[in-house]
Image 1 (cartoon, rainbow, N blue to C red):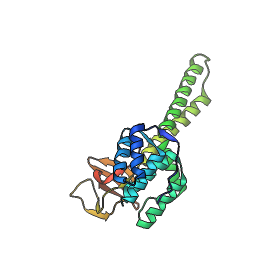
Image 2: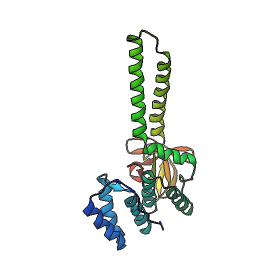
Image 3: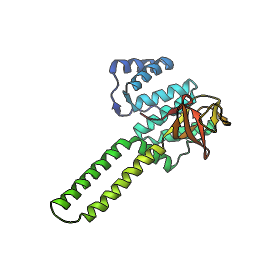
Image 4: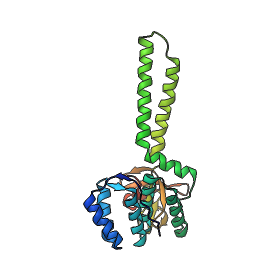
Length: 231
């Protein structure tokens, strides 16, 4: 089981509902407390402590995939590396893919969390450099060579950030006996059948079919069977 640690509040939940949920959690009424926590999260009201309690509740109820999902959200908010270790432990116990504790996975999580901020900063720099180029060209009557080189560099970073951010989206399989298909159709051939809890890299989507990476192979999974990880 988890060691519950009080963390800083990220988005202050509604106090009355939160107190009620915490009381139910302390009374080990996990189903009822989880429902209240889930409604707060749906309203974008959450704290790292709340997300950790949700993960704890789901583990206690035997819902492995949802426990891993909330642990991942908790890590995105708290940066508590113990959460990564816990996910890897659960994954190893249940023979689940996608949770290997690597520097790459940590980088992916950080890029996901700060994607908006990174994009905003890069856009600001690009706009500044573009303005500087116009000023040097028009007002100072000189070729803005260094500014132009810097602009190209930051435009490349902006493109890479957006492209990479899309590429590293992941989701958790939430249903047992989930079919992996060779194409985005119920008539496609079945590549494999997997249980809940696996974390898959999302590559794209066609209608209700999500294209994912499964053991270095591109396959398709029903949208209803995969829960994308985001806040």
